[in-house]
Image 1 (tube, one colour):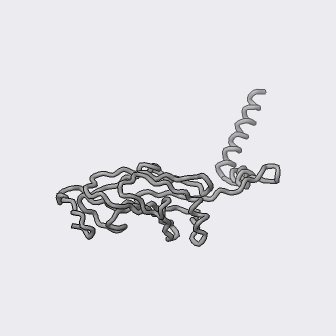
Image 2 (cartoon, rainbow, N blue to C red):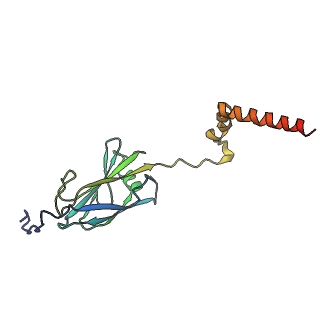
Image 3 (cartoon, rainbow, N blue to C red):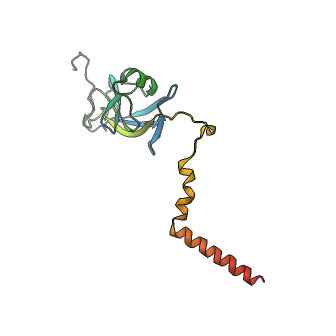
Length: 185
């Protein structure tokens, strides 16, 4: 029995460990999310082989700078049967000025009652930290008429001119053109 008087489930020792697989966003590449008003992030997942349903799940975003942020509207703790959580990063940002979200890469961590470092156990949820995502803050709009210029665009041609291959191709084309015009006479 557990401390609450609830009988513990009987789980065969050869049962697989419980798994959580993130389905949204896709895990194949890093998703980038804007920290802005009305820009919500939905994380969704499926469970497999869970024989002992956790009473709650803890969902956290761990930043590459070492800070950990609770995900969702309830400080990161949601019911154990939940299969998604919606995070309003803008609301978090405005209500937690002492620990603002950084423009960086994050790892989503989800775990059950056994904690974030729980070992694999038959039928129990194995903590998941497979998803990486990034957050950014958009820059303010600057109209073209106000003198905005694209720094990368105006220097693009100078990058080609300094390349030896570009010079060689241009010389070859010039020789071909001049040789062809002499033959046409």
